Length: 204
Image 1: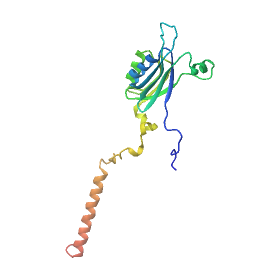
Image 2 (image 1 turned 60 degrees about the vertical axis):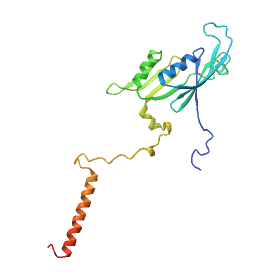
Image 3 (image 1 turned 45 degrees about the vertical axis):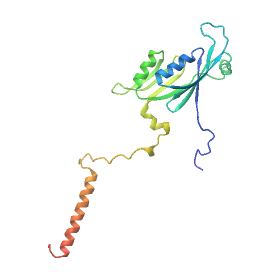
Image 4 (image 1 turned 60 degrees about the horizontal axis):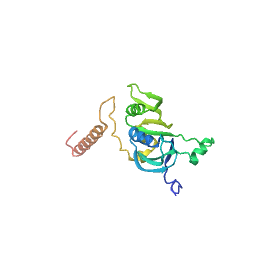
């Protein structure tokens, strides 16, 4: 049996929690900043008597981030999870790692919409290579370059799928090794021809 063939886990989903009544707002933030696609949303009516917060809460919203599904829920007053948080058993906040093409653009948009920058790294050309942001709802987002996806095996990447790179031309000669092979074959053919001529006595 191959490794992982009998694994009990067939898939995973990340679950993050935001304070009420910011569920809908958080979902729109993730869709706008990170390009998340909302697959479904479940609401619950909770009579709060709060005219500002209202009575509708997001029980769960499933968002698609690339190949990963994330569940976003509001921490409603009757939530068992909130009770555990208040008792110090669990924390509602989470850490998300995402891989983006243009980190600078993502950071700029997130900051404009209320996120707080925790840290950011740049290369020699001033291009952002890593960024950590805390969104307005308490979730820490670790934003990394998209090129790192292949290094961590995201989305089924495999080194076996990569094409074989062409053989490099030696820098010291500037000669393509394939040309060297062709010349070697031609020289061998010429030598064989000379041997045949000598055998026939036409060349001494």
